[in-house]
Length: 339
Ligand code: MRU
Image (cartoon, rainbow, N blue to C red; front, side, top):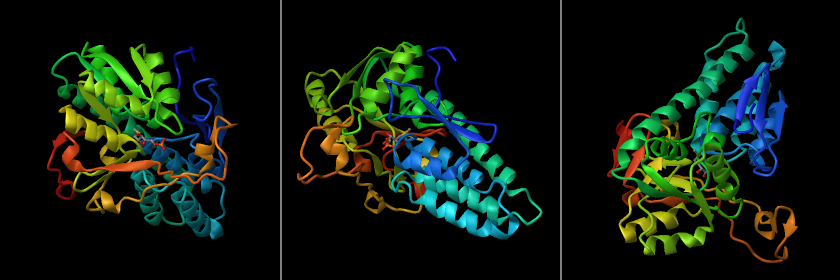
């Protein structure tokens, strides 16, 4: 691999190889494992993160859990690995989508089947499918640019967060190639800095001009008229188009509304949860206080302080100008339950 090449997830020789996102951008360290528990742990620790990437990794993990398991224990093994993976993170619906896809395959198989290879082939399909979805999102998103634009994005939505080239990130990349992007501001994305550590890492690799800024700097850019478009990803989209995404996303949607700047979501249809009506039904993950007490292992405030630690917020659909999927650009009012 040359120094510009990297990937988040690769399945080879019965092992999942993943880039440890907790170490980026200072160290590029890949781990390889065939242990589903190690993958569950990597999802919990955010070594693997981003809604589509979590779903893909969990699919490989569930398949691996069944490798070389005797027929008499396969039901119990499958059920306990399913439960373990399901409980790694609560908000991104792609995790549950993938696990349920594999469960369907499992339930429709019989004793004569090679369960591991059956499930592995489904996991590979989910991964390949995400690659194609990212490609189409990148193409569909070009339509939102009517001039060479300055874009603001939040959290990470690139290769690291997906199985392919990314969602919102890929739109920015494709638009940049067509000379439709002048510059990108990447919110640092407190507290875990997905923007400054991961998105900036990816913009740098792609040679796209960018600046990292603290999340609270966004308003000053809007008031100076410096932002033309905001594009971010999503972890779950309700039937009415309310979306959950990284904490701080809602702030940007409100700023866009106040300053009359279009606010777009880019996500594959696997992020749409037709089982829920509105954003009120989305389970928001709360992270450990340690993530506020320390930065990179360095203590910054005493453990006795109370903390407020939501990992995601919900943006109401009326603030979203469009939701860009691999199929099309949907516009407000949204009704995904009928689609
Ligand atoms: O907590 P994370 O890092 O998994 O959260 C990631 C995000 O919120 C991303 O913006 C979202 O998953 C979209 S990924 C294409």
